[in-house]
Image 1: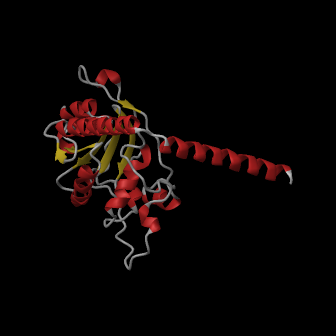
Image 2 (image 1 turned 120 degrees about the vertical axis):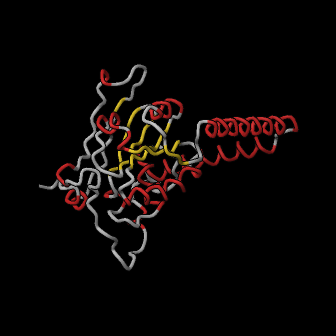
Image 3 (image 1 turned 45 degrees about the vertical axis):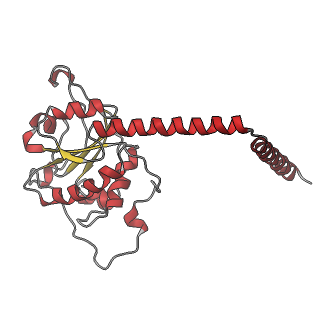
Length: 250
């Protein structure tokens, strides 16, 4: 028996001993032990329900439009994870995004989903560099960790699936996600008959040269008293096709 086989046999025996010990422990549980396990389980369920109740009281499980700009800061202070959709009424693609976010909000109660009219919040639009509509800002612990610009990273088509948006939001752990983070759903699915409409997501400034996916920190002296938000952008690498779509390959 060679050295590798010896090591494998040693590991196998160690695992068997651990399994046997666990089985023996379970078999030897008495009434008091079982009652203790039951109480701990009940306490865990109570804590989980209390957390869900707190989330609901802070507006989670629903997708709503914020009435004014200053509400943005209230939201990111109260909720650890936030998805903020910056929209305008003139962009039809914002309605497409709204449809998917309304589905995701109740599914991911752990995260706050809201929208803001970019034309009514010039301070945020300027400091968060919202130049393309729709744009989705992802915030964790009052830190902007990512931004979804247009539909380019959603398959570059208007008819992307809710699962694709969910996958993209999950890239920075803004939501609890159990799927495969390495591959977007639209690449896992079979090719549909149509390829989907190609877009250049420039409804906000109507000038393709203004497309901007760089993130900049908010200058602290420009913030209102008592308000702060840090920026820590983690970019997602673009494919050559995506770079070309954004005009970044020149």
